[in-house]
Amino acid sequence: MTVNSRSYEHIIYEEDGDTARVVLNRPEVVNALSMKLSDEFFDAIRRVLASTDLKFMVISGAGNNFCAGDDITEMHLWGDANDVMRRARHYQNMANHLEELDKITICAVDGYAVGGGLEITMACDFVIATQRARWGMPEVDVGITPGWGGTTRMARLIGRRRTKEINMLGAIHTSKRAVEYGLWNRVVPDDQLDAEVERLLEVLRSKNQQGLRQFKYMINRGVECDLYTAQGFEAFSGALTAAVNGMWQISDADKGAGVVGFVAKGDLWQERRSLSRDFWAD
Image 1 (cartoon, rainbow, N blue to C red):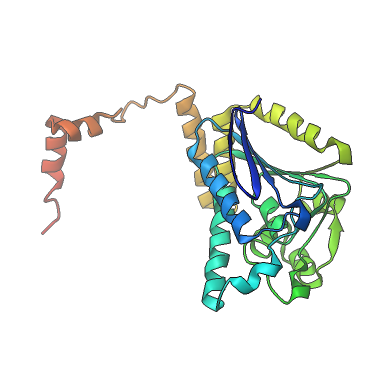
Image 2 (cartoon, rainbow, N blue to C red; image 1 turned 180 degrees about the vertical axis):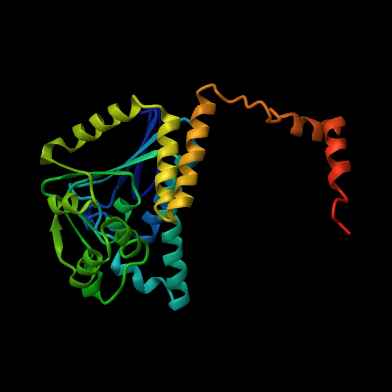
């Protein structure tokens, strides 16, 4: 049962228990990302970010389509080259916020997910699609280039060679190929999309939620750095897991005494500062 909702013009936003559900809602134009819709979508993302009760976010599209990408008919309103760059950075910031949410995000894709619509899916954790779903980056035939993931996230997900093929040729592909490439997770019969999302949510709800948050953070950050740095994330995650499971006390740790000492300006604080303040300061 929906417990909370917020009124928007071009998206539907509902909070259903631990799950935020966002529907891109411009079906008459295949849910194209107008500036207004994009601003509302970003607002919804920030709303989810601010909540500690929400654990999951499901994104879908109205009218048997996911999203046709940026609304090309509005691009003349973006302004000059600097304004276009500012708009692209705004959308990048939106996608980065979506990718960095400390919630598990699921895209439920039916119909078309092209251009910016595909870029949304690449910023999410799981993507489930119908057999009839189609995807691609057709910007090349409009004479423009992607601005917020179509080359960058895609190359990290499926490699440079396939990313060049998809962007330079502009073909529209099947959902099956998206799974084969590792771009999406699962293809289901056209009438089973909602049911499969609920099945996935059931599995995810059974997990240690702190563990899921750590996995997401560790994997997202680790893939962008060298092996040893990534292993550092794994090691710290292991320690944090032990701590939240009750093994937090370390014999030579302060156990908060340093902070308490600072607030009270007690003996521990005075001793440490008297030893440190002028050490090698000449």
